[in-house]
Image (cartoon, rainbow, N blue to C red; front, side, top):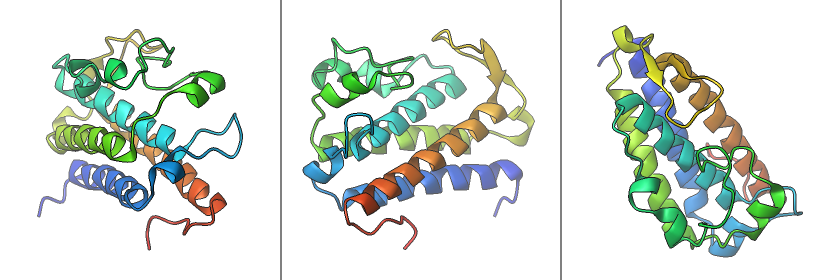
Length: 183
């Protein structure tokens, strides 16, 4: 077994995605879309947001210029075309009212995208060597950073994903469901 630091990071990153998919898989469409109020995003939003950032990250790391979301024109397919989806269509900075008004697809469609985006990102991160950890990558979407180290991006996304997993777990508990992904 490869005991490199990057191997450990890649395993934790992949495990977070697996937990997200595991906890959401048992939900129905209504539970996935449920919101306790207009300013709290649904579980579906959190899954979509995580998938969008995974898709964005794998594009940035691999420098392919290809995201599943863009390549398959999923915004149009899902009826999101006219909405301001925030930075790079990831949901970052999205208005609460916009989030509440989106015509979310079924849970199965959402999870299909999430699974594919997570798989692409997991594979991209799994191919990063420790020598590549400090290599700089370009952001093509005009973020505040114009470039950053691959390792910084991966670590930021790992922390980000775990924060959203916690929010999903909380939303499960508020709905009266088992609120932890690890049991």
